[in-house]
Length: 165
Image 1 (cartoon, rainbow, N blue to C red):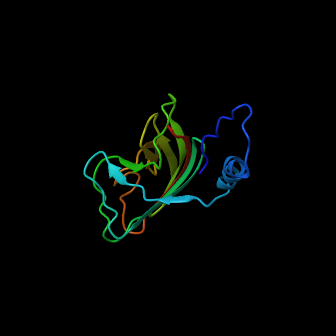
Image 2: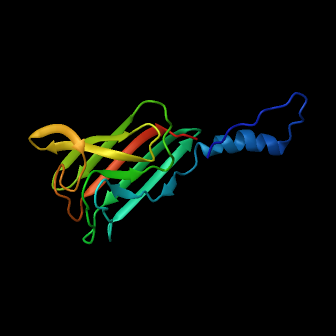
Image 3: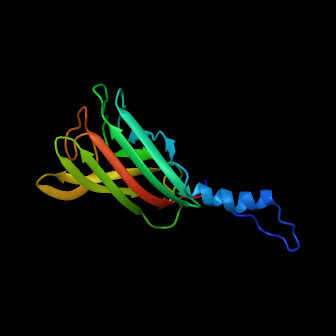
């Protein structure tokens, strides 16, 4: 994982260990495997529960830039709660005064394409999908929008944002 480079001092003797840390290790971290994490799935109403489904995430962080993917597959014991859905980010978003938009997709009885939105300073993200097949305006993803969720439904979220630190 990249980190803030050191501040060099005039006359400082540069050792191999310092060069390795400041150049080699920084460079190698940009090509490292993504870091897995388990995002939390929440809602604005009654909490959903993944049950025997799967909820996985992975991310790569370069300085304050975060690339992230979340994949959720509902299981036969998943419960869907009520309200608008949110997923935990791997790092809090910067308070840059803008909302970040990424890609969201629901694979249920149909394939629904939408957007993921991260508000300034947020710790989680929300999916926005079409309201219905005959109404392509987008709204928060809920247990019934754009369709009623069931076992096997997949949610895929992909986005890039600036972290707070």
